[in-house]
Image (cartoon, rainbow, N blue to C red):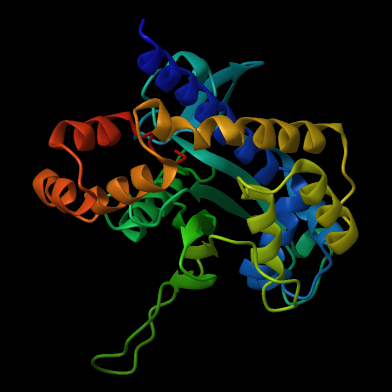
Length: 325
């Protein structure tokens, strides 16, 4: 294996490790709590440490298949049929697309947090390095929400008990944006004829798109969640700086697991930045080429603008890694 190919392969492995560490960081309950209080209406105004208590069990990270027929598993326990999320042998199913993070949450109703008033919902967190991966990212988010709703049959509701379908939130964190942003997409009614109002759960379908600017936001109330996520996912900040902000600005206890994943991300980021150089290009040039390709420009157009040979352009595109999936 020549040096260039070896460098590219090594960089690929580093990106996979980096991405998995990023998902594990986002999957920490205290981080999920910060996301919930800014995206789910029932948690708004709640303290993160209190919101944590409503997160059920351990979040599923990169282990629940997305494909129809593979999301659920069925087992027999003491003669009873038990259905849950399918996480078996996920590490050996190469090429299988999986949800980044999935977890159950109990939400208080109308300010009542007593056990009888709690309603269970499903939350999905997805991390993306780009908002323009070659298709409309919102289309993919809609597909993910629909899969999480349809996969509940036989797991969360039986037969025709459609009133038992749980509400779903799919929250997408998109990096490298021009500005910080957030948008929520949900079901809405429009009365066209007559006055009859059809009953049903209008809160069943929820998508939240979070855009993170290239540099972490300033420390203010409006950008509090964006700053936290921007710091966590930054590929330029040092580990001690990240951990210091988490502790001092957010009061997040930095345990061994958090420190380990932050250290991994920071140690690997340099290797990822050198990936473009492994095929003879600087990081900025490679990102520019990949960006143009994702927007539909032809190889000839990209080569002309970048001042490169078409073979060089093809090499950059073929060696790019998929966004976090």
